[in-house]
Length: 128
Ligand code: I3S
Image (cartoon, rainbow, N blue to C red; front, side, top):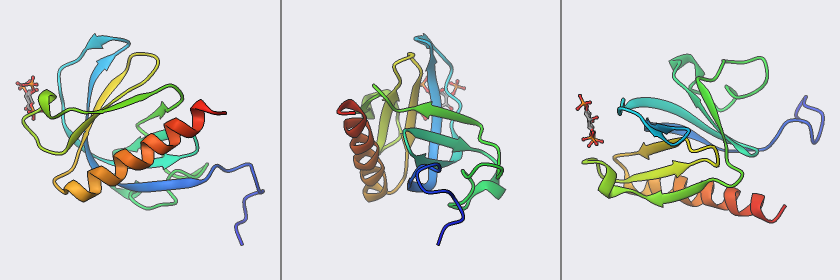
């Protein structure tokens, strides 16, 4: 069984590699800078790592690799955003604080699964 005290460490929902760019910070538009990112969906947060050493499902655990950034999903909005990029399979994530990210994968099934799973977390947070 897990060494974590039950209820203290949030549940790992999903982890994997996605292309990511931030396009707005606090409502202010940013210049795109696409990068491959190790993305971890855990508890109420989407956590981004750029360190290749972080590319394992345990990377988000306290004391392990340091994340590049973290997004609070409470009140966040998702929408498909093929109009915002020449890339295919792109969606936009907007936080309540007005930060906006595009997430993209070459694999349609994979990006659909990410969209669905993140939306489920957002929906769950609404009813809490
Ligand atoms: O939406 P944009 O501004 O056309 O996005 C493209 C640019 O950011 C481009 O960089 P420059 O800032 O050097 O123009 C990027 O290299 C492209 O990847 C961006 O478009 P895509 O369609 O890849 O999201």
